[in-house]
Length: 568
Image (cartoon, rainbow, N blue to C red; front, side, top):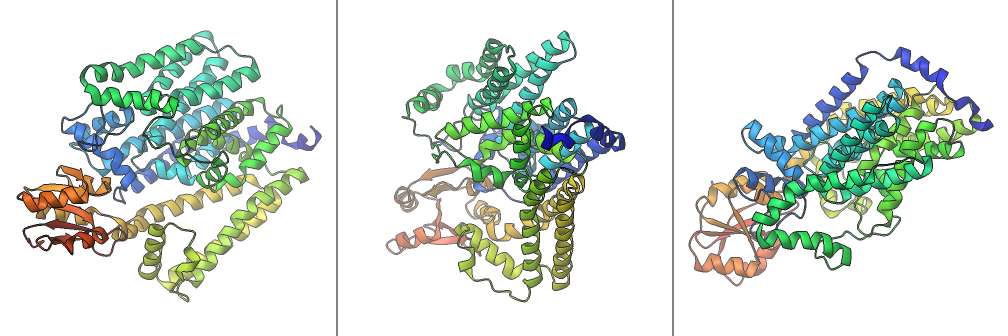
């Protein structure tokens, strides 16, 4: 089409390929690896991370190889590949710990970046592949999930592997390569199922259905299904044989129960449009440019036919996830590598000449300019206005608001540092404005990625250390472990996984009434309970006294027992 004429293809890309240093891609992957390990080393487990870590600890201790258990009453209704991966790393490193468990996500994140680079090279050019890696590694949600103990990154690795291999299966240079790639794709789908159940098969299959229908390709669907069944049987067969009724009930609940709507599992029901703001938040700051890139593709699909593969993957999976009743922002993670590929191809091209596209590009860059200006003014004014009205932060969750106010009050850098940072942000915002107006894509991509990496090193390093002081239950849990040594510990009320994880000793889950009854009638029984709940019961039970409690945290807990013991 005429209005995209200057965007067409190859000569301009070849200039970028020649200028790409040979070690650029390995250096970029190494930078991301350092960032992820850095982030994984600077914060204590959240509740959701500990939910995945406790089963690994139990497996290391010889419990529940086929059924991921949190305690004697609660199980994780997920296949075990993430837990087996964590168990393997724990054995190699001498025991489970925060870093060894998080390394599962770190390695999966770097592996996903490598696959993105490989697929970008096959589809477009080495320069576009490098920009895709920069964009993906500097995306907020990807960087977070690649450094925290969550199942989603391992799932993203296997779905990306499946779809990258499927591309080679359909477009490989020769028949042996295509055949081999088909088996790799099938195996990757099976491992994705072993990571997160049928979801791991459905995502790549939905994407390939869309691509095969559009391109009229033949896909070996039967192979994908039976290989996935063969892989998942590694877990299902011994589980049914040795997992007992608890395992069979869990499988029934997660399959038949979900299909019929009778499951007791939390489905996270949300509206069909839920993922629109989620993808903008999760893919930030690059999400401002994604509508423009998709619009350019759909205006002229023949501009670069290889764009069709990632574009159809994004659209088909996004629609499929939006139709499902259960939704979470993290479910979008398998889309991010393919969004990064489209964005990387777009940013790798020379400055935009077409006026319409340049105008759209400038409009897409303006929100980043605005955010840079707002953040800069906030840094410059931070010392002048040290007391923030909590009413301005009503949009935040209660916990985040309390922690944020404490950080502003106690942990801001010195005034000179804030002034320098604010002025640097204003300068960066001005350069972003100028580059956007000129349609200079490569400088914006490199500059924004560099700025985001710098922010991540600060936020996930010293920033995470500061947040730990207001948010981590680890110091209190270590005190509990010492005070309650040799006793029985009950976690009363809602189960707090990170508290149980850091206590280390077996922690049983009971209602407050039952836990306090045991504390009154049995020796050496300790009750872990939220402070405001404990106050209600202690008024009527004078024989029970707190012997340890949290200090200065948003979530306050007490350790209560009949015998008054002094905390060390």
